[in-house]
Length: 194
Image 1: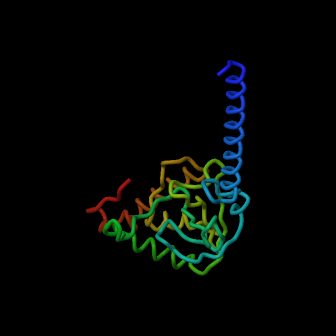
Image 2: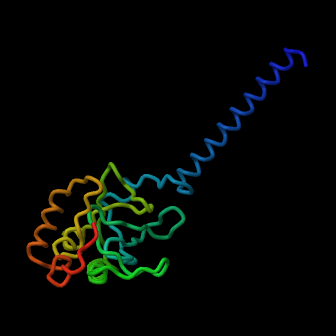
Image 3: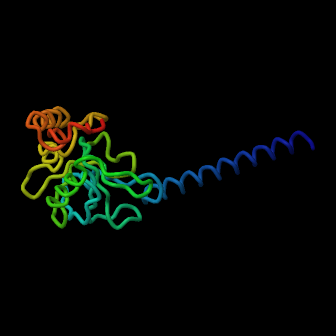
């Protein structure tokens, strides 16, 4: 093959490759922006400061609200800055941690079927499992996150910094000193996991 024809073939091949990669990237970005892949859309604009009806309580620190999220009919919300004991799981089988049912019941009583307001942190909008991270304001103006801490049914979660971190630590300390929930005499035999 003459060198001129070879160079021409290489240029055409390179142009076709660049065009194919460009088209693939554009299609992936468009699919992602429509919520079909990783990009969840503009979560801050969609959820921050907005009110939603709670349709289901998954556990003490996770709820579902009546807002579509990509292909889902509702959005899973994970409470920012706290961690409640894990409820019983079937797959894989795992027993409920102490006070998991009480945390679940309290969250259900305060939120299910009610309208709550969500507040997000700009630096981290979603957690590890794709749940929107939010402070949940109850109809009475208090934060569910704080109510669970003060009742001793949640621990302040130090894994990621947030605007209420110090206050949440103080609320956990207050519950410890009062000996309520996780910090009661009855639960001292089975200390909570960090």
